Length: 468
Image 1: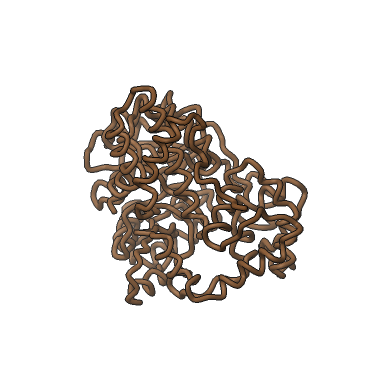
Image 2: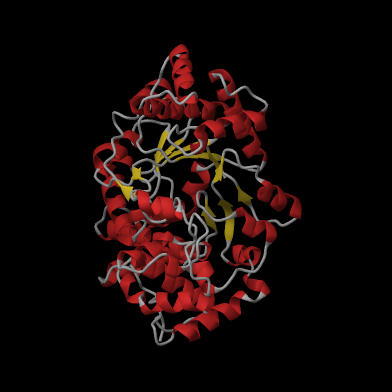
């Protein structure tokens, strides 16, 4: 028995399937480039063995535990830590048995395909996980995790990762990146500058975060100009460790282009906690434009990830903290929202902005037309809830007709689940090859062109877009 069919995600029609197979064969072994994600730099720095299977594959992965919670399974019983440190299940085998008993809940989801790929290719599992075989599969994975060739650096090399970017807060001292850099290991692990905690007035501890930003940069963040200079210094610090991008998780894509005096006055209000909700939103909008200007100066690629209503449940936020599966997509405007930024710097060829969305309705109506004309804009891959075979197909169908392939940036896995990285890239490569095969069979693309595009989508575009 095998968990993985070699023709998964390819068309059932023989000619299209044969073309997809040929295209995939030409790119399947290309190195993986992971320019945006949430794996821990500490893993690569310390290179310690991963913990038990549950701690590796279940506890940190909100794709997994949100589905189980939706069916009434408590996060405490899945080992998810509480904000106040109150008791949760800590026995890996007990957590795993609960997960295996409910594995059927993932039928038809991308999470199921990622997990099956991980089980089969990394841990040698040959049968579908269930309550019956839970202990045997647990033991098989645990045995592998106890070996030196399953430590983080060894897996990095086994996965054929060329580079991976972590996402690091603006106030992070990057000690793990410093340790990696000084270790002599050749694996390329770089940070990305994520300044949400010192850009968003609604972020917990915002005022104290501004004080710390000033402290670590030697700048006076009590004033607008000092605050901007502090950002420039932090961005330069991140670049010392290889950073090529910044990342911005704003509630909306709104931008603004205030006069310097107006921006300074607005900063004084948010700095002292006197800003109204609309003023706080305006400040976030202004900071996207300021970050775009900084990107022109220092070359960092600007990633904008709007449209998530984060921490939708205040009760769960209070009990378990951020990033626990309660971030929900919402409608997002781009054409009007981005106009102030684009009016200011959008035609500058030195600027590179990668746009993501959780609102698929804007692919054809807004995002593809914007990226299809503004030289500063590129479209990120289907993200988060749409990182799925269906989501990838919809993206190609709706974006390609106006933006083409070359105003997109290939694929990034955006994951906290390190073992799933090869699985996610494999899904993207298969879906793209199937889409290209369809274009060839419809006589909309020549076969030699399809081979070139397949390599670009899998490898070349992402390296170019992220300056890697």
